[in-house]
Amino acid sequence: MADFFEIYFPIFACVFSTNKKFGYMKTLQFRQAICEAMSEEMRRDESVYLMGEEVAEYNGAYKASKGMLDEFGDKRVIDTPISELGFAGIGVGSTMTGTRPIIEFMTFNFALVGIDQIINNAAKIRQMSGGQFPCPIVFRGPTGSAGQLAATHSQAFESWYANCPGLKVVVPSNPADAKGLLKSAIRDEDPVIFMESEQMYGDKGEVPEGEYTVPLGVAHIRREGADVTIVSFGKIIKEADKAADELEKEGISCEIIDLRTVKPMDINAILESVKKTNRLIILEEAWPFGNVATEITYRVQRDAFDHLDAPIVKINTADTPAPYSPVLLAEWLPNHEDVITAVKKVLYK
Picture (cartoon, one colour):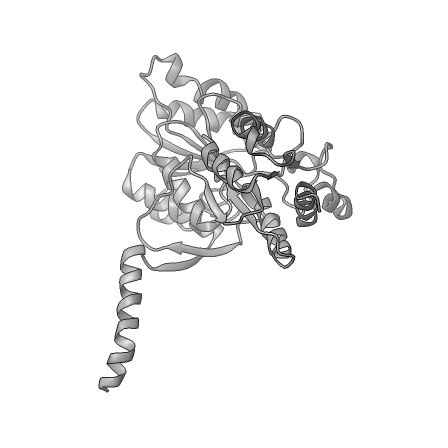
C-alpha cells in the first residue's frame, strides 16, 4: 500500500492541480456551446434577451436555444414572424432602453432584409448620439455554404460587415471559442456580428467547465510551425488543418493562425508569424474580390514586406454564385488540396 501511494499520489496530485488551475473540460457540440453562452449570460444579466425566428417553441432552427424558453419564459426568449427588418429594428431600438438583445437570423443570407437596421442604425447610434447611446446588441446566425443550399443561401458576408465602422465581426471555429467569444460579445458595448456555420453545429470539442470568456480581437495560434503561415477563420480552417497534417509528412512545417475575430483584427499576431516563417497564405470562404484576405494582404505587405520571401497567396471560392450541384460545389469551395498547392508554390517546391 505504501508503494501504491508513493507511485500514484504524485500523479493524482498533478491532475488535481492542473484541473484546479485550468478547470475541468467537458465535450459539447457547437450548438450546445452557443446555448450555454446565451443561458449563462441571461442568468447573469436580466437585461439580456433572445429574439428571432423559431428560437423559442421550436428550440431554435438549429437547436441552439434548446430549453431556453422553459427556463427564461416568453418575455426573454421571443419568437418572431419572418420579418428580419422588423425584429432587427426592435432589437436596436431596445438597446436605448437599457437591454442587451441577442438577435438570431436563421442565416445571414436573410439578414440582407434587415441590413439597413444593422448598418445605418446599430453601427452609427453611438456616434450620432454623441456617445449618449451605446448599442450593446449581438446579431448571430450561420454564414457561408451549408451544402446544397444554392446561390442565395451560401454566401459569406464577413467582409461586408467588417467594412462598416462601428461593427465588430466574430467568426469562431470550434465550440470552446464559440462559447467564450459569444459571452464576450454579449457583454460588449458595441454591436457585434457573430457568424457561425450550419455545418458546424454538430461539431464536438472540449469546452472548459465554469466561467470563462475569450476576448474579442485576439487571434489564436492553432498550430505552431516554421516554414509558412496560414491564416484562416471559421469552418474552412479545417481544410488548413488537413493540409498541414499532409505537409508534415513531407517535412513541411505550417503555422496556422485562427483569426477568431475578423474585426478588430489581430494583425500583430499575423505580422509576428510572417516575420518568423517569411511566407503567408490566407484561406477564406468568400468571393475573391475585396475580402478579408485582401485587407490582410495589404497590411502585411505594408508592415512586413522585407520579411516576405515569396508573394502572398489568397485562397478563396470561385468568383461565381455558389452552385447547387455537389460536384460543382466541391470545385467552388476551397479545400485542403488547394492549400497544399499554395504552400508548395510559396516554398518554390
